[in-house]
Length: 590
Image 1 (cartoon, rainbow, N blue to C red):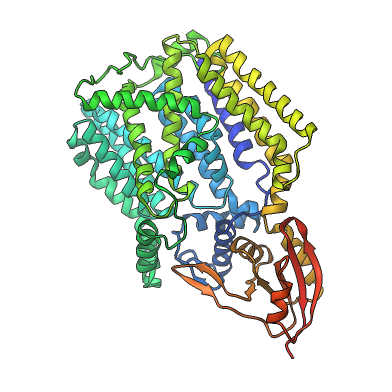
Image 2: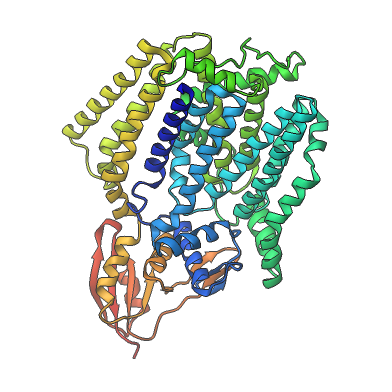
């Protein structure tokens, strides 16, 4: 009975946090950046054409990404109607599945770290951000990460060397291939490629090359092709240029050149990882240190199958919110022979390291590229905390202070964020409020951890984080909306042009605004100077409409417009000052 109550509490906690972090006020901020409105528009056009195979953007075949996100958005549009928040539903659902899948898999591998692993993933900055974005990154990360956990469950069962264990392990291996095929539909060959690199490296470290051979299971491979191949075959048959555009230009060229202008230094992902794992960064550093110690011991030949280098076992331990010792013993009895800490940690470490190293070599770098490396790092952090709790080690002053300072800094920064966004001067009152809020959070995190120990870590971390996310979604979202999203500009344009239904053109606007206007107004804009849709696909040609039209441009563009439109009349009909945008009505050409 006690065990069932614990399960219910854990599932309710995860359900509530996923609902709040991933779904609450998805419409609070309009689509951002160039990718969200493009992907949302692709799904809208495919749905309008009743075409579930060929992605289309502005009437052109669009082969930059595979189909999974568009399928998810089309289904979401069919259920909820076409909107910006409906375009984000697939990522939110994928993130939720990642959290619950991690909980169930880690429950089998390292029982005591199950809940904190899932909570850390649900609440980390990068996961939270991409879970609320209409992009392909979360739809790659969720199935890829769950496939890697499924593979390790198979590896764990294989190590039992029993026929019963091997029969049950076949299911995990087939699941690994099926999930990897789903990831292939999300973003292409990067999923099976990274999985192969991680598995080969791990088996090499474990001196177990037979595991690589046994991974090549015919049934699993058949499932992989049955899931992934049909769409790739169909789109290639319909559009013969698919292989060149998608595989050669959008995969190889993206990796080996700066065609897409995302060049960053080699060390770019070091600060990205530190920020991405907030608020668990401090404990992540402990997890990396433990995994590195285990890896060094294994490479030196001194590792033992069932002993961690810190001489710890996988015995269950008390964590986070208080759970009685009796309940923990009952839960521990249910665990299926958890893998040795050292083996699991080495696997997690290599799983995180290889994607980061791989994309550090790439010429093009974006934060989302290493999203599949973030969940294993967060699981490492949870395992590190539970190891210290298990050996009755009290939280130390320096890491506790660093953890509390990190959370206090987040709250203090949010207090002054609106002034930063609008480039206003700081007042003494705003600085005092930020300092007071930061001090309260620092003490509210540090004192419980130092006095009550690890059982307070969950509450002391999540409570201020929930407050911060709540402020972002309710208080700061209108600020971001005003200065970053094209949605308010589109609403202004609808009020101006609706009575006359004039064509729309742009001049000197960035791609983000142009793509956003095209989605919210549901028609292509005519760019005066042309618009690069994708370097490897096509551009919208330069075009100045001869008829009367509405022109959206940046403040200060009037001198250039008078030269371009020397014989035409320009009348200012609106402006949106937060983004320094002006709107003109242009008379017909003579």
